[in-house]
Amino acid sequence: MLEQLWLGLGLAAVGWLFYDGMRVREAALVAGRDYCGNLGLQMLDETVSRQRTGFARAAGGQLALRRHFSFEFTSDGERRYRGDIIMLGLRVQSVQVELHRMLH
Image (tube, rainbow, N blue to C red):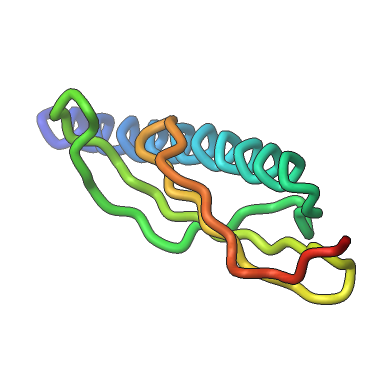
């Protein structure tokens, strides 16, 4: 009986992590699209890729998952550049892009 309870709790935790990860990934994708759109860049492949996950302290001091995503973009239609998005929980902590060629 106790084993079934632990198994159920474990499955619930895995399900929650999967669901939460999908929500955070979608929020990162929106942040990348918005960032690129505001700078006149084109986000390539319309996707973000999770690079690593760890724990960090949020503003209130509570422990939260920090996820690092990467994406590719172009400024000139010829070259691919890399961008990075750091999410702390569901909040965008930072978005950065590589130095890239600017069109006039």
